[in-house]
Length: 214
Length: 214
Image 1 (cartoon, rainbow over the protein chains, first blue to last red):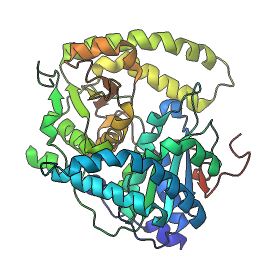
Image 2 (tube, each protein chain N blue to C red; image 1 turned 180 degrees about the vertical axis):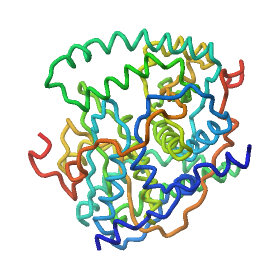
Image 3 (tube, one colour; image 1 turned 30 degrees about the horizontal axis):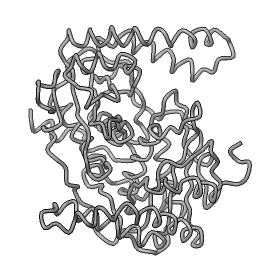
Image 4 (tube, one colour; image 1 turned 90 degrees about the vertical axis):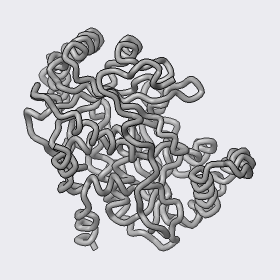
């Protein structure tokens, strides 16, 4: 097993992985080896952090009852803020890309308990404040590493509305709050290039021309 | 030229890149093709963002006079907060790793004007607040892409003490503040595995044991 885990995903190129990592929210319920989750989290630890403080902790919730509890709390939050989007989406002019995103988010919420791994990324507070920003480079490494090893993953922070309750439930204290939840599993769909606006809409040399961003 | 840019860096593996990307602050002053900076920024745009809002803007400052101005402002901030670290580092028990980090940060501040590219990552505010957190996955993609194409880079937010002044100077408004400065150039040193604590210090399954993080 350990040989497989060490070699899996090592053949994919960096740019290839970057260009084909998209949020995968439709996941099979089949189990995922914990060693593979450990491997993608280790990739996370190579991210930079201010003063090399490495403030992160990774909690991979795999226990079925725990995932059911987390999914229930997640759904309570989610329902209250998806309603306006559902109403807006009844308009025939609602953009297709947004409608697809919304439907995938609804799918995730309704099927979260089935995702075999609920990976929480938490971090030490600093001067009493959560340092979410310090965790996001590590999170991006994890999303790319999931892509490389063939796992589907997406990033959500919507659990934060019940964050304290969920954090205490998995042993995180107010000194180490979770900033992100990454549901992980084998993908039902395929990887693919995500929809983005052209780089030249966002890239400037030396100076942003006046009025360009108004 | 465009063929070179398209193919450069495409051969490095994702995990290889992740494991050998460290902050490179000692940079040659030789120029870097703007197309290569555009390529690493394009890698940034494949990062996820909430609701696929893609709030980011990239400003690559390459003009020498502009870089001198930015370096001057950066240094004014830096000097005031490096002094306590310098005094602490006179203690013979000061950890070597911290001393190396400090010396590299001092080097960067003193040589920032020589770095051929000052890349600013900025983003739309949301409800009046900067969304730094939403930019950091894109920033991590950029750091990895720099590694892949052979560029040295590091991440700093220390410019923020003079952030508004610098932002206005390069055409960013209060609606699109910069969150990070990434000085980029050809590296003087080598890539290498950064120093990190073992993954098993940070990785937990299902539950953090009581007292484990106290």
